[in-house]
Image (cartoon, rainbow, N blue to C red):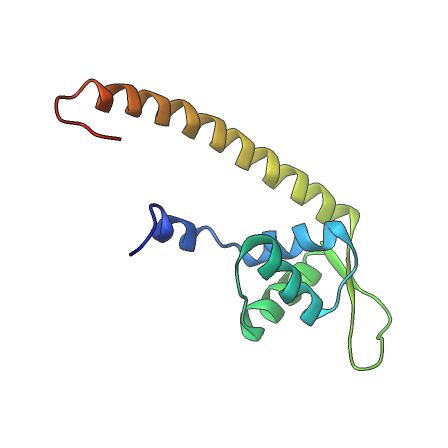
Length: 118
């Protein structure tokens, strides 16, 4: 049985945002990014999705590669990436606050409806 919001949550998995969040914690190579994102957000990014997003973030100057460690290339967040992450999280907080207010209104309307069960 699906949980409430599973379909919505599936659409909200934003690989660039998840990568920026992971790199805000520490520098990581691709495999470590994928593992951290799965542990943090419960989202498993395939290699194509992960490395495609890494490439786009690098092209936009939001992350930068570090010297390779053997076969692995770690990445780190740049100042531009940090700014973008701050902006995105502020937008998420704004949207969440608006959503909570509307959710409270919907609960009040529905609870006043005959036969409504929570």
